[in-house]
Image (tube, rainbow, N blue to C red):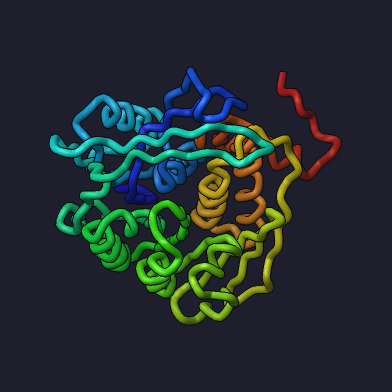
Length: 317
């Protein structure tokens, strides 16, 4: 079956330290998966969309665990490449709501970094309405950068909306390198979602200036956790963050993207897309791992009702 959404990028095995314990002192870990594009894929699949993940893993236990977890989320991984000569990347991190989180990447020479343009074929995108990519993939290697531009080409050929989240990871390169590799992609996307600090690092102090040069929808995630959606044919929409207790803030941006893109796929306007995005993010940060808190559509509707109606029932019996 043709998917609604195609994503492509790195997915790693996640080893999450026991809550509150610094990474260097942790002795027990919970296994999960992590990857910006696959987090969005899982979020959209949970919300009822058909999603295909394209990417590479090693022919190793970590790679098999990644593919099994993607399938468990309802994501089609039938076009995934298993590389017998390169390992699956591993991410180790701790988790704490009130202090900096330490993250250690073991991804040098990984299977994901070997992504190449020739592995991406038009049949993988047939019927897709949306293609989502991030800036992480082109920063992995020169071949992955070329593959990202191939993704742009194939999304255009399929008539799909191209969504782009820079998702800046400072351990992947210097600010100058991010501007060199990622900034050119901004004008080729239809939808761009980025934090204020990311826009600034990429040399775009006024994101609204990009409207009309390529993007039709621009989302700015502000430092106070509110977000603004800018389009060329409507007033700017603004959404504050929902006030919830934070257990683990990692994964909030990808959850936000999943909620927003689901709204777009349903034909909702900017206000409703932002509300959904904020609600999915609020649910995810209350749980460990990047994906534990991702809701299905009924759960999202119930959460939105609870966030916006103080008198709504909070216990479902």
